[in-house]
Every structure is written in structure tokens, then in C-alpha cells.
Amino acid sequence: MARSKELSYGAALAELEEIIGSIESDAVDVDTLAEKVKRAALLISFCKERLKGAEEEVKKIVSEIE
Image (cartoon, rainbow, N blue to C red; front, top):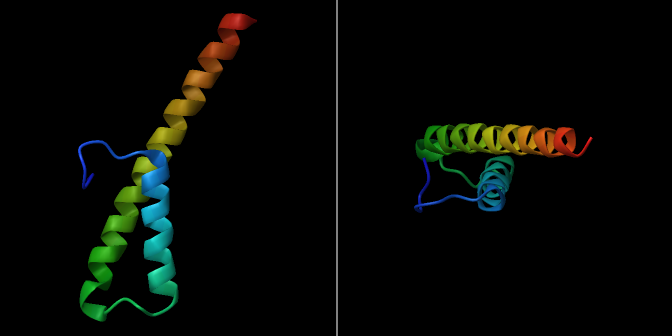
């Protein structure tokens, strides 16, 4: 999924926003639309996983200090 070795949440979110912006502005050629949507789906999945992991880590930390 990642274009580089390690994709950060911020980079994934920025790329996703770029894809959404290009689709909303009709700047995406029909021939590449499916590719962009597929990449956006992968980025959304990646971000959801990162958020879930962060939430679990925060819960663990909070439970340790209680």
C-alpha cells in the first residue's frame, strides 16, 4: 500500500485529501478514476487502523495510571 517504506498517518491523510480534492474538482480523468478511488480506499483503511491502534494504546496507558 505504502509508496514509501513507512507511511505516516499525516502523509496518508494529506494524500487522501488531495485525491478527494481532485475528484471533487473533476480534475481526475475517467481513465484514472478507479485507480484513485482504490488508492483512497487503501488510505482510509490505513488511517482507520492507525486510529484504532492509537486509541488502544491510550486506553492502555490510562488504565495503567488509574
